[in-house]
Image 1 (cartoon, rainbow, N blue to C red):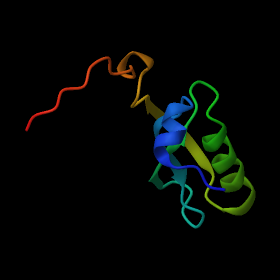
Image 2 (image 1 turned 180 degrees about the vertical axis):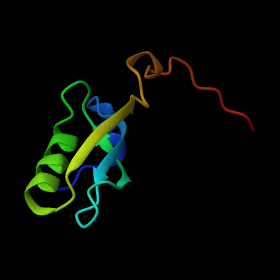
Image 3 (image 1 turned 30 degrees about the vertical axis):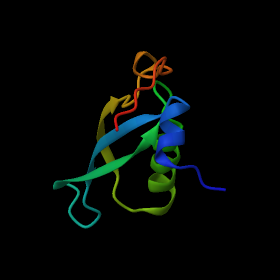
Image 4 (image 1 turned 180 degrees about the horizontal axis):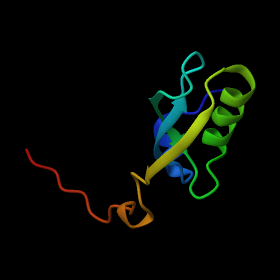
Length: 89
């Protein structure tokens, strides 16, 4: 069963963006970048590690560097129960 983005956020996942800079296989002196974005857990980033392992095993472009940005979209302080309900006619 796949999890929705909201359920992942409630479990602590946040939006993670990685700028992967890699060398072109035919021209190693030229660098190219690839933007990867997914919900992932800070600070260990298991989804990003899984993707980078796949990249290293299956793709030819050698990774030069990875710049990671992470933002938790839902923070615990933002979730609270509503104590009152008002109805208007």
